[in-house]
Length: 334
Image (cartoon, rainbow, N blue to C red; front, side):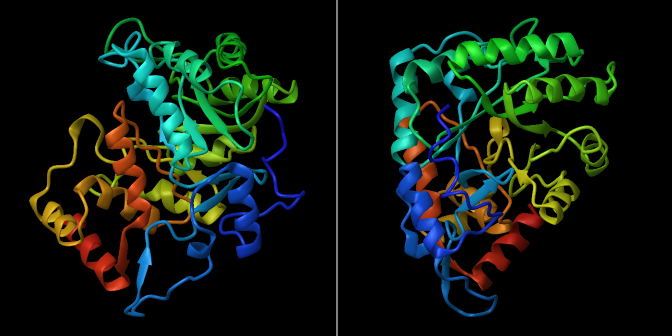
């Protein structure tokens, strides 16, 4: 990928950007978020409303500026995350629409399809616009539909990187994530293979998935870790400790299943709260994630343009700090 648009005139900023830098980042990435929304940070108890999309830019690894609400491409494959989608052209349209709506972080994996998801991204978006970050993953194999098996031996991972580069038509992958830690392979060996690919210029940054704070800390002794992708949403906070660690270390936290995944989100109390604020429970869930922490990078996925537009509209939800506290308390009891 061309390196133009991935930084802002050499500035290396973390987390929330200044208003001037935010405006320049939005223009460089083609984002549609209004710069004025990042200009004000409201304190708790102010009684004023704050949009979920406030502080909407995050800097991954010091040089990848992304809009915090991205797009997860997993659902663009066939049923059971297997094979090609029934409507391939629709899948390509969804990807293009995601970019039009301001998403410049797309998450995928070689196991999605397998392989078809990465191929679809290249079909739809190559040549890639400046500032687009494609994050992919390796380290899981798919023996069959609904089967996911960790495979982290170094030689396999090296091949995974090379094949993803070819499918995505990239010279370098901006963010490559170890899909799962293989219990049969020392973590250091798996990460050593990725470090080697990074040194060879095939990977820019490395991330992990479904890991504890202790595992992240251990991994960082081998290679810098810039993102963590764990299951997390408003009603499933199993990995709260990992999120806290990421906040402390300014590591991007990419929650998968941000609106419940296949389990969905069916909570009468939260659904009523969402309706009271003119939103769906899924929009409320995404807005809560954006409000919960400035390091959270939600990547909701869908194969429907209508659902995509609904998800991206979650940035516009405006609530008071007291509203957020009430919703958080309701969710904690869900």
